[in-house]
Image 1: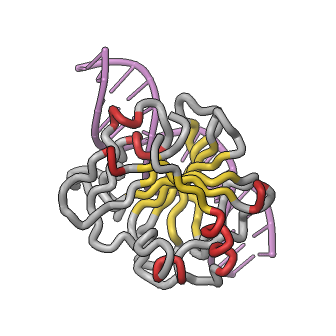
Image 2: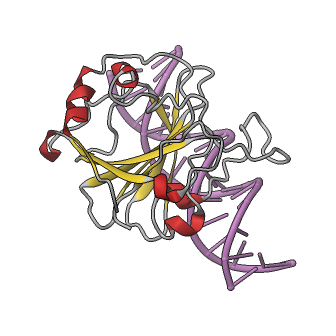
Length: 188
DNA sequence: CGGTTTTGACCTGCGC
DNA sequence: GCGCAGGTCAAAACCG
């Protein structure tokens, strides 16, 4: 698999079938600098309603078998507990996840939220480590994973998990440029 | 000095 | 049951 799948969880309540997933690649700034891109804000209200909002979404999981050796969503999310001190005995909470690719020289695209890195891990079948970030806003448990593709180190896969419970924290006007350059691949 | 990053250890789920 | 791989914690280091 080359392209990562972007999942738009629907409100149907049914598990989103893999066929609904489509790769989602946008390229920004000719691959030069992307770090001023920002999500959220107007984005949610216009072009991609619910992109990071994911209101009421539930599914968004890709079956492990579908992901094979690919990055992000295949990783079956152990994300077990909410890490409030204990890890065991809690049920699995599956949050909506969105994964997409960007072509960028930098790993971190600035989506307008503040993120704190809490881990980095080498993953199999990938030369590049995966980085784990959490939204620093109090009470907001949104996480994201960032990983560069082995096959194309110009491509960064970002996986968002969860819903921001607060407004975006800084201007996202740059991101609209990204959106306008966004490329959606209807098949993969 | 407060917030962020780094990094090794630890925990959990899954496949064999 | 065991080992592997992925995800998270937490202390120390780093930086503005």
